[in-house]
Amino acid sequence: MATIKDIAKMSGVSTATVSRIINQRGGASKKTIKKVNAIIDELDYEPNFVAKTLSQQESNLIALLVPNLTNQFFAELVSRIEQAAALRGYHVYLCNSEDDRTKVEYYLKFMENIRVRGAIIDSLYVTERDLEALNRKGIVPLTIDRACFSHPYAAMSVDHVNGSYQATKYLIQQGRCSRLVFVSGPSAEKSSEDRYEGYMRAISEAGVRHVTKLYSDFSISGGYEAMRSLFRERSDFDGVVCSDDAIALGVLRAISDAGLKVPEDMRVIGYDNIDMSKYSVPRLSTVNQLPENIGDMVLDIFEQSSKAGSEPQKKMIDPHLVIRDTSQTRSV
Image 1 (cartoon, rainbow, N blue to C red):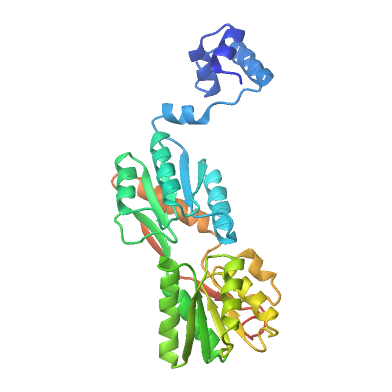
Image 2: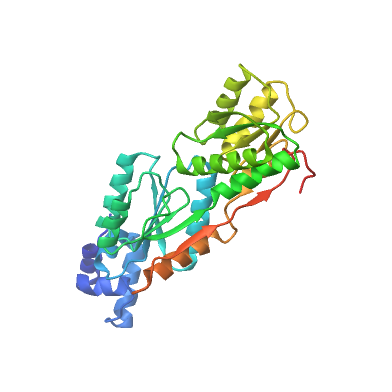
């Protein structure tokens, strides 16, 4: 792999001159710049981005830490943030933690070592102490979605309690469900617990029957296995509220395998409004928590919080229902 020293030697100039030309800082004649650039092209030289970042006073590199990329929700979230960041001149260093604290610690340390400008964090396994450590290093921390909202740093979250409350209320009132099941994400996972709280609030207000609460990971197979296990014991329910769309897609398949139809025999509603939810059969009713401009919203909070002397920004997003076929209403 070619280095700046190789380019300098072939060009007959100093490494400092080559560096200035690469970074477009002038200090060389047009003839020299043309010659150096020709050699750069010839050697197919790529600058060491990390080394460049370390040499600059202010980096344009932002770290984005997410739990996984297998769940379509996080893949869509990453895509929207990356697109917004690119338009503003930022590079995104993607960190896939796989909900593993060891990996989280590795990425947090790496963020410090390469001096990222900010850290956008969507993780249950990042503590307030972690955020303090980033802040001491001059890295602006911003937690989103699943991360805690109560810390003193920048944060953007979703009102999951209200989102699930509205979904459950809709199944009860419009879907005419009176015996409901809740399929949660992992035990003690905050967003799932918030959604369960909203579900129970709607159940309590309406005075309808809560049949049971099931646990799953946030995956299609997890939702399928949880529902299939329930069908071995009982089927005395007419509505299912799910913690996310991946779970809901698995639930739909399990209901079909049990010889039942949605929405005729049972109604289902998901949460997230991932792109796939529009194409399931029947199409999935769900809760949308990602505004179209979510990338710009995240970057706006980050940039406002990055300004000298400014207070860390906080924003709560209000989700809304997206009604399709699985809740026994007219498609939209």
